Picture 1 (tube, rainbow, N blue to C red):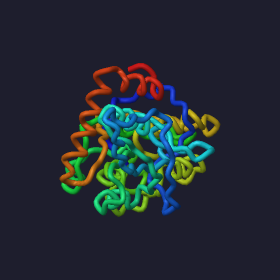
Picture 2: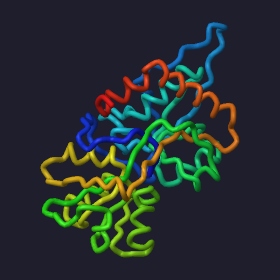
Picture 3: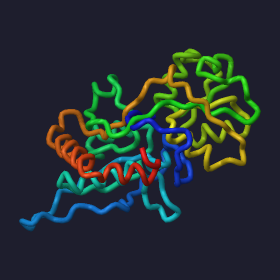
Length: 274
């Protein structure tokens, strides 16, 4: 679903329970970030607050706690960006399907949802500088031993999240209308299908797949990395096409947190030292 980050290792330690992102048409809920926000300016004027759409079912990048608070890597990064960039943010849980339309229509000012930067997407929206590198990763069911690379999926049933880059790469291998591609609204449902034996494998962003497999060891799923088949992908924050002012604020804040070590602190919290 998404693109831009630092390459994750399959052995990274992830703390959140895995729920992945391409949400359903569920009620949208707002929740405050757990990271500190910027204070009002010294001149006395309140900082502008922007509404951020995020599909909070994509742990560890964005997910909800038992109390409904939206948390995760993306949430903390953008909150820190806002503090440095001189603005406030309010996160609203927004289904992946239709999310891009919300920023185009003005219902959301920013999208922070592990969104992969692609040339196609750049035609209709503007992306911040990259803030995360990722790759696609294969998860295979217990007992499946003949999948050693992406090419080995040609005659397998494969689960993906609809509309993600994982969906796109599997389409290129198997064919867009191949019935062996099983599409789901979010990655947890795709991985749940793998758990129950409905498919042989699942393909998705490595951070989310690793997180899910590590937190569900009872199902015996394993991961297969194929760096030759999967090029690095980069995540970016999204703003409406042509919103130069807001894009500038986001990029300014992003550069600042990378320079002062804040980004590394957040990264290490979720993924361990780089």
